[in-house]
Length: 409
Image 1 (cartoon, rainbow, N blue to C red):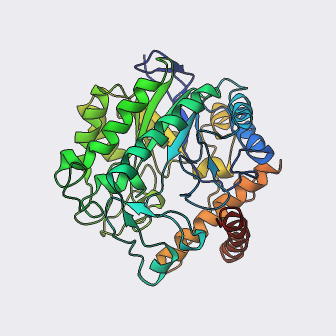
Image 2 (cartoon, one colour):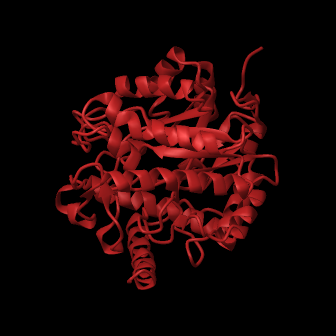
Image 3 (spheres, rainbow, N blue to C red):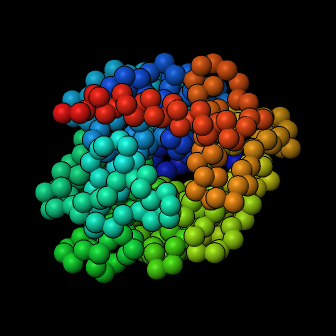
């Protein structure tokens, strides 16, 4: 029998996802006061739930409010009020979808204007050319910093499951903190957490073991991993294969393969090392190769917008299809595919020469759609990139001032 994108998938822990379509994480910056999910988040996730997704992965939830990927983000810590998270989970599950919370620490990818804690394995700042000063100068983590970080991942994970989420995804991609430990470009340590590959991967493995030990067997555990950093001398596809093989033995239920970082936004189809990525399913070749060499279920995310490409992912041996931007512009795409395989979202492209500004404008347009859905409105694809970027900057500046005022002590 041919496996289709609507065929259920049973994970190693025994739970079954209703189909092979996953809403991959997108940063929303739509939190209510106190870094909590609120009415806008509930309405947004209800929209995706109605759209026919088998799995919904949240935008990244921070394990430490002192280190946020942006203002308006959500954080879940030891003393955080849990009731809003319970409502978030139940809202997303209304139509049969599973919801996993993606948990994260940004490391050095913290905007300087936030004034937060900027940590990294080594004190190597982001290199974005003329835009480098947008981000803070990182401090190399001490042993106590690392031990606290591990406990924070455990606390956030256990509280998410307590709130009713079906699973957890540990973010180890896109240049965030765990990814920084994996990469030889950002990890220049000479202790047990750096140097050779085994030491650079140690933090991820220790976090997985600690989280796994704290969760019930029914809770799914996933990892988002770069197939490559797409930077010369960085974490590459050979490294990704070694990590994926190890994750299977550690009891991980699914590995999502993406790629890139703020310095090389391959997740938007742009790279810093000169490689050209496919127009759709950017990371399919990497995912296909890794899936053929491991037993762990693999998901690939990046640029998938058409039914034919989604089915190709499954046909080539990859277990799950991750979609992000497509669902910002067409939240009911899975249901539309059931009616017509030709359904396709209209995604605007930003072809500015300045790649950093183009990436920011692309994110601004996408976030604008999420905000519209959070207010109960339909997405609107035909918008001005420049206006969207300016409006997003104004909004984020306002949220940044609120954040700084709240944590000025």
